[in-house]
Amino acid sequence: MAQAFGTAESRLARKDVVQLAPPLLGEAEKRALSAVIDDGWITMGERVARFEQAFAHVHDADEAVAVSSCTTALHLCLAGLGIGRGAEVLVPALTFVATVNAVLYTGAAAVFVDIDSPRRPHISIADAAAKVTPRTRAVIVMHYGGYLCNLPAWRDFADRHGLALIVDAAHAAGMPEAARSSDAAAFSFFGNKNMTTGEGGMIIARRPELRRRLRLMRSHGMTSNTMDRARGHACGYDVVLLGYNYRMDDLRAALGLVQLERLGEWNRARRVLAQDYRRALGERVPGLEVPFDPEWPTSAHIMPVLLPQGADRSAVMDLLSREGIQSSVHYPAAHRFTCHRSLCGDVSLPLSEEFAARELTLPLHPRLSADDVDRVVTTLADAVRSV
Ligand SMILES: *Cc1c(COP(=O)(O)O)cnc(C)c1O
Image 1 (cartoon, rainbow, N blue to C red):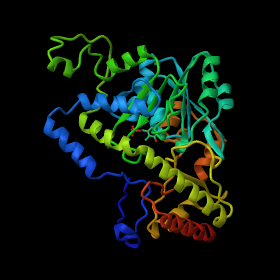
Image 2: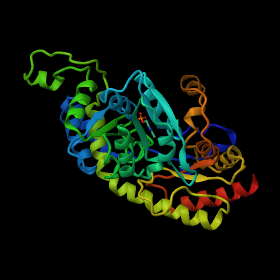
Image 3: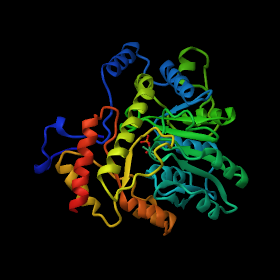
Image 4: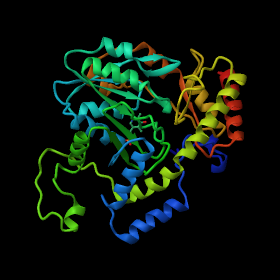
């Protein structure tokens, strides 16, 4: 997202700022929003149904369930699978905090799992296996940076231990394999993701029975929706389970339909830029590591690098910022947050902690130019040398 640049040394003209991950919105999005306003049907209408179908099609699925965010998507998946008090759910610590919070909303315990290695910062199957107990009901895996987890291996793991496999696919929109082999996968359309609806999310769940529950729970457990009633299909309704209001509206769905058409092309541009970065970083910034092999399948959601051990990251970030280059950290390890230490207990995850301490995220989005990449790498090389 665009950040405020108010400090004296960084009051650069906006065009000079290399943004981390701005949303790409234009005339097509404006027209799509206007059309919804002209039609007057603004929530859970025909556009939401069309967006669900189009998104399912891109992700190799029969159907998808649109919701208000990826956070609510994750919560809904867990609740729909009947996970709650007394259950344990294995989660990565190296993720956005929403992955963990969704578990805690249900009353289940979140059990933090370490990553494979700093070069491969996915949740580790070996560490997950060591943390399974008779109360474990599910595991959530996350496609860090858009680099796909090995879902067939996770399916085997989940089946061996009788667990549900839930995927936090917030980084992986547009990857047809992102939801494959899982019980349910949750996508995000937040403003800094590969496609956006402002706020918004989507679930892909293979089993029709689970999808039926998710649709019910998305809208208060009501047996009919507004459109059925408006069309005269239903004169009353029952509430058959405790649900939520996690619905998506047609304004967001209209944005989603436009963005989805561009997603494939945008993800290809991201992958090309990520390879440009890898090449230039390898040549010009000694001591820097880039997670994952260059050939790893990815939506190239972010451009993570690992600074040399002991480098002063905040000094590097300050120097970048002074040159008008936004950067970020993905992520502070979730098990170290004050809230999560108190709710989940003190645990030690050495690899996640090392990764969280060294990681730096560079700008990556489809409008970035080859010159921008060059400028970022040059500035980063200077910064790493000088701190
Ligand atoms: C963005 C993100 C979320 C939350 O998505 P929202 O749509 O903002 O709720 C969850 N997990 C990961 C890994 C994310 O990057």
